[in-house]
Amino acid sequence: MIRVHGATSGNLAGSSMADDTSVQEIWLPVIGNALAYLCLETFSEKYPAKADTVLKKVKFLEGLGVPAKDAAGAAGSTVESVRVLKAKGGKRGSRK
Image 1 (cartoon, rainbow, N blue to C red):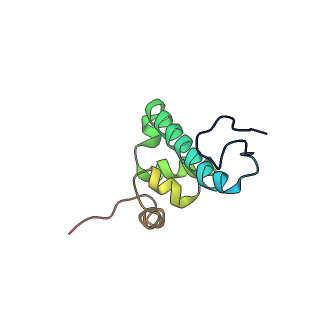
Image 2: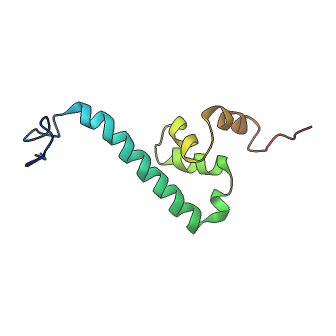
Image 3: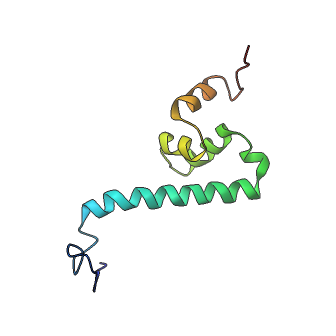
């Protein structure tokens, strides 16, 4: 159990962070998304051919357990665009 001592904001001083669900609901997704982004960047640098498209990046992140919406955002896309790419087999549409 983590206890915060000497905090200047009144509501956290001496409170148990493990029991404070609002803190967990706010910060755990932020930490998870940051770690997923760092993993993606490291993977992209180490294996550029395996992370050269949005779809490959999303598949990598989903393999780590990142939800589709968050994976699409970390890859620089939207969940709807990723859905279309998956339906097309990863091929981009042509503009006319």
